[in-house]
Image (cartoon, rainbow, N blue to C red; front, side, top):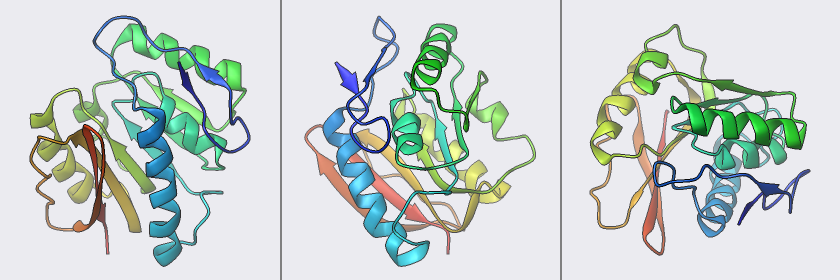
Length: 187
């Protein structure tokens, strides 16, 4: 069972797409993510997500972006190309009643080639590890990360750390069982 952990929708259950294409970020990892974001944002942008923009790439069920919205982030944009996962995100957004959450049913690389809107937090969890470097290049070079903003990459613990491109510097990493969250910051 996947649920929203904190904020206005805390405790509410989320629908998750069936099959193996989508692997939702666990409750434990999301709890760690938002705890770490609080301390990371405290030093850069203020510790609260209220009014902070949040971009969730490879959104899957939308659990991470919806958790951000529950904690006050706005606007929240979720990008997911899989039709089944996108339908699930729409169901979750409707069930939670979030008006500041937008789903873009699109390929992430194509989406990032559009004119950029800078975000305070960008979460990247591609279903395949080799996609991360190209995404990070587009984020850094395309103006997608606001000054002082954070990029968080979720990867399997046995994987290599991301190669942060010019314009994003390594900030910290946290391990949660089989997952690692790597944090980068735009100065």
